[in-house]
Image 1 (cartoon, rainbow, N blue to C red):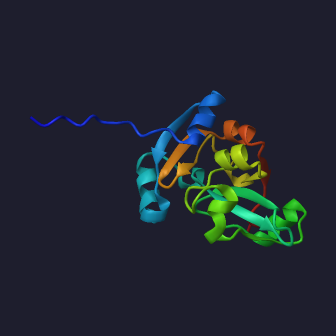
Image 2: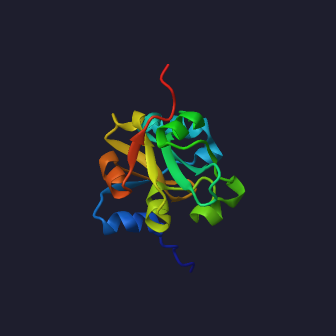
Image 3: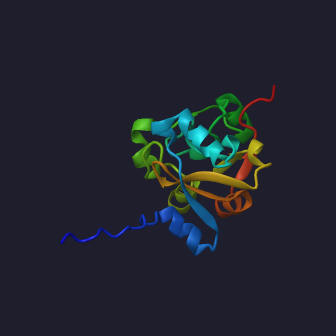
Length: 171
């Protein structure tokens, strides 16, 4: 007689453990933008999650300083104006960190970068697009591709000592 396989709960990520250590409530979710693209947004909308409340985590580097890394989190459906970000942060220029070298810079592969882990384990400054302010609950990566956490925006911003900036000019 074959043994029944036990349904195993996925192991917590380090980022979820950080949230637990700080007694921050969150909900584990799946959201795989990399594989599903816009279909993932439709799926989220069907679950009542507004696409503007789902954040992508972008790692940037200040021009001229090989160790000047920082993170900008913005809604997955929006873009970022690098010149405006540089201006907001008082830097001459900023550019995207080398995608091929992300694992060495942040400890995460493309699609798994998260403000929770990058702040906790690397100490990089974290900035948030001011357009997320209206959303009480937001989603960010849980440190694994396709895995996210939904939590209170104010809890996340406080946890990572985040600051709000304008990342795209208002039309």
